[in-house]
Image (cartoon, rainbow over all chains, first blue to last red; front, side, top):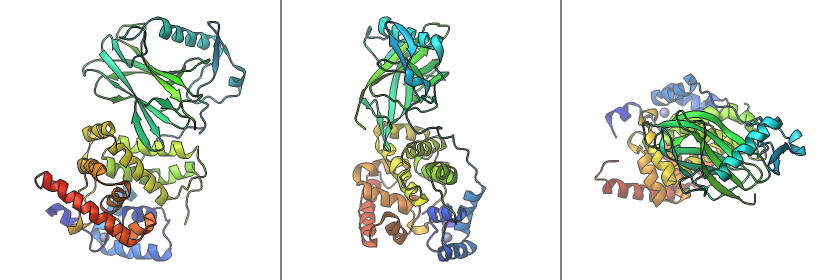
Length: 242
Length: 164
Ligand SMILES: [Zn+2]
């Protein structure tokens, strides 16, 4: 035990952080609250710990408005042209604001770009490793959170999963990244809006998203410096039963 | 005495306490906030789940341990670790510094039940009686799990040449 820790040691058994938090929230029952209060009066260490709880203010990000996975407005592509599917009229839209033909055409163009342009290093196959002007080789990693377990580049998707994206490229470079989700019979939907990022190891893009509707291709649409055409780093996810 | 009735209310009410707890384990504020946010994004789609603070405390412990157990999640946490964020232990002579590095090693040597007891004791600073009540096990079980953890910690510390 160091000298500094002896100065903050409790006079007996410390009030646990859980007890302190519940006391601060006025959630302790009578006898327990009274005992904790007495201890705080006598113990400088626990009193100081309680003080840190009381003075601290945290700003937490808002929760999504809807818990369901209807964020990706279904826009059906048919015969190379896009139209809004009937069910999308009623579907709440959380992350995306796809509407109208312009957006549908943009989605169709994106799919075409993906399917036709051979955007990856391996020449047309989906790849999570691409070359981007100004960033060099960029590797996309999908991060899935399922029931509290975090998995990197998992093979499958479930509607309750929470997703994040990491990008790795040599420090010093940078580009702009937008994360889109492509699904059979639907248009691409933006999961994370385009924004610039600086290269580094496992750079986590701000924000998290969910994927509805089963199997999907998740792509990072990477636009290099002074470039107009994005390069796509993509990963396929199979559907799993809920 | 009030308590939260649903996940959204619980997020507002308990979110800060849970972030503080996650921060003591993960040792950086961004990952702590992200972890708690992720927990509640899950909870709002499962309104049947208990949203009392003790339950949520356990849920945060388990999520943190999952993140630390994962090799890549751990590497990222170690890069971003800010030990100064962690308040000094109030356990006096019984204190054991359970930093990220040691915790990561413990995730490989202890089972989940033993790990949870370690977190309750040295990170949340609960008494053994409180741990027993919190986890719904006997005091004797808590003692056994802690004893096993102490053995492993001693081995790990010895292997590091006494520096824990
Ligand atoms: Zn005390």
